[in-house]
Length: 303
Image (tube, rainbow, N blue to C red; front, side):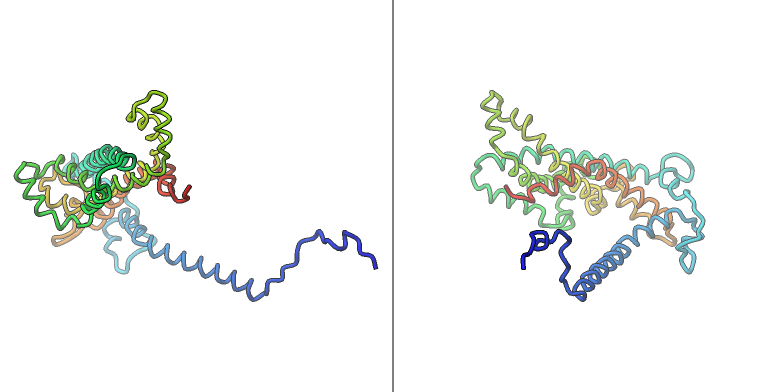
């Protein structure tokens, strides 16, 4: 019996021979994973949501028992108290926030300016005992700040840098430069050195070739490194509380911590100050989000 080509080769969809139990099991497993992820997200975001809620509650609802998740009176008085003193004028918290912006911003910029050329030099040139030098640079980040704060305090007292913004900027930059060098060296390694060689054949100096051709390709890596360096400088607490003593120099972390204690604690003010403190880093990360994603994924696929 003859069989036509159309009958031999079916043009319809291929039948699904997967057992029904396996298909149901796959969908069930996906549903379980989604449920677990939702639970994990709720657990992780609940403190943040509770902080935001507390910042917009009036004091009566903040201390209500049982706690009010819904149906509370919304007020912005706590955010006003963050920036305005009770008798008028600037509050101590607003001065602390401005100090954090100056100290964290300048220290991050200084660490980037020093770390990027150093990383480029370690990547491009043959240096004696390069691995040992890189390990020594990284070893400065092994110890937590609390271990070295006392010797640094004694040195700062001798040179007159106690209770000064420049003192905090220098120590934050010193801790961020090793991190910047190690981060940026990996990014520089991913940029072919042939670009600079071709530029030097055209008459550029090595520094000009780095500035015109290599540096623009490092912008994503610089953005990613700057975000992490900024987070360290912005959140740092130990040096800020040991090396400063006046409200004119103190940064936001010790200023917010100083709100907790005594006979009573204004938790609404603490929550509002925490919300304001978290916003600048989030805004900066959002502004450089494209470079940040490109930077953290640079080198994920090897050539």
